[in-house]
Image 1 (cartoon, helix red, strand yellow):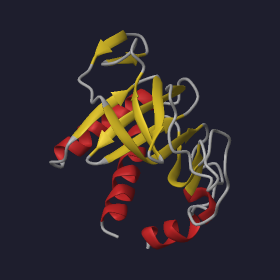
Image 2 (tube, helix red, strand yellow):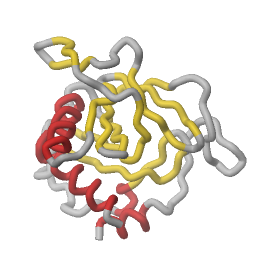
Image 3 (cartoon, helix red, strand yellow):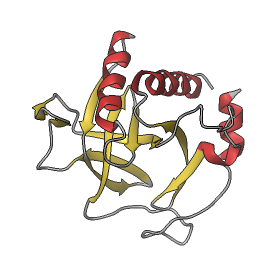
Length: 183
């Protein structure tokens, strides 16, 4: 069901800024663009985790890597705090900023070394938002919220999840990725 809801939601075309071809698809960016986020590789899926400072991006990234590995799949951190991306052949390729490659920032502990993957192709965007699921938000998302555009790449799957609810969010992301892989 989630896959069919996602498919119908992601057929909308709402371009964002960025260099595009006449067809509206960015083919290639020469230089990496840096954003405040974390990224992981879960199997063949690059997952970009966005959110304000202190929303739990690093914790969620490492929880996803651990949970995916426990289930027997390949997983790795790609980048923490600053993610670089380039557009190659119409796909966003995620990587680490050279200054922070292989490092994770833990509040109160500083920078810790962490194995990391060099690159991953973006397949899912996670937006961590302040506020709880108990704050009166609807239980089921509006279809238009299940996808978003990313630098003129149209209709990428997206989940909006509550900040600082690491394991609950990790479980939702893993279930969502499983649904996508079985469609």
